[in-house]
Image (cartoon, rainbow, N blue to C red; front, side):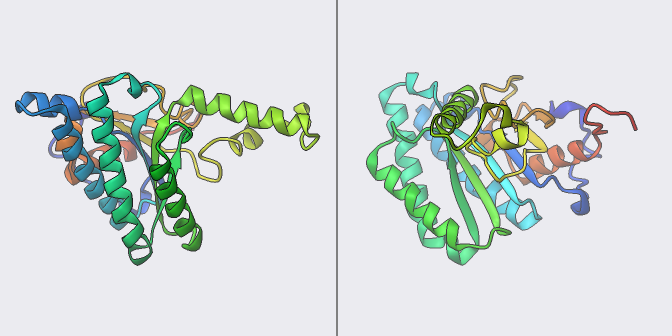
Length: 250
């Protein structure tokens, strides 16, 4: 589908006008596996490899931030087998990342409510936070949305602001868009200019609801495990052809 991008236009990326922040809804793992007669867990494994490849490509291309939707607040409704498989893949990824983040200059952050996540995964995420804090803030950063929901993120931010007001640290009338953004999981990170959704679905699914106010959207029928560098090039090229007016008139 690709929003009307032709083969001739595909991949014509201007590296001088790259989006600073790309966000991706990693969708289609289960369908990819089912179409091949494989268990859904095999799709998640293939999708994890795609994430590694696309993250490396973004870093090499010059994109500064990549945010991916790995596990939503609603995904707990899936089978225990599938949920456990996703968490095991994440644990394996974090163990590898801890060994390579400093060498590869890759920062890693988590968005979402981590309290329901297993203690061992929380400990690994804490270690990646410590490594990230030691790295240069200009280095490439991957953000993984885990037990994340856009509405939940906003509610948690409201509670934090309300707690600060109750403690006398803030006053309600001080709240504006900029200060509220500082209470979100994405505090300090620019909003994504481009949001990509593979798999043919045309919805946000509770992803970055505050941050996407002026994001450009790109949809493709390609399932996430089949998403490759050329597909990302098509998404970026489509973004670069958009006329971004932010409510104004040029």
